[in-house]
Length: 160
Image 1 (cartoon, helix red, strand yellow):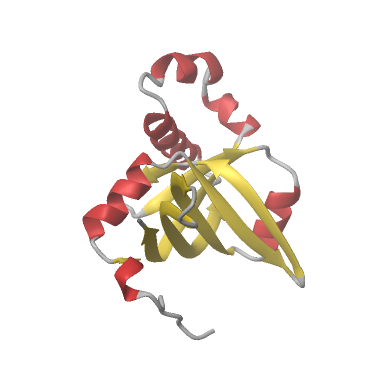
Image 2 (spheres, helix red, strand yellow):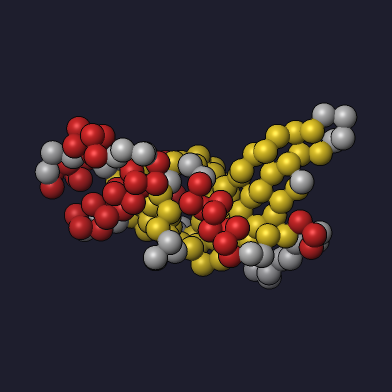
């Protein structure tokens, strides 16, 4: 598939610091998947790891998204920073990112633990009580699936 470019260059986000800020402050991503000729979109909370340029998600061990990921690990995601619609101007102030990459189901306990910690640290001010309540030992990781989206590319756009 060819590469597309933002038509309105004045709305393109090219500053890496601005892109990083959106990734670090966002709380959920909308992920598009495909299996054969069937699309599927799901919204998931995430944790961003700047060091590996990856996003981590958690979900149940079985279900539609797992089936889609196993069939096709290539995904597209978006993060939207909604700053509100401006009445009587027909404008919407926002920043958004479109992210492409491959999503992987983590199998190793160490990888799952790392991903879950990144996710909880991203979402919670004080993640330890939640972590302590839900993770009682290595067996706890068998009850949850941790996904890692390895980011290949990001494009950003804003309207202000």
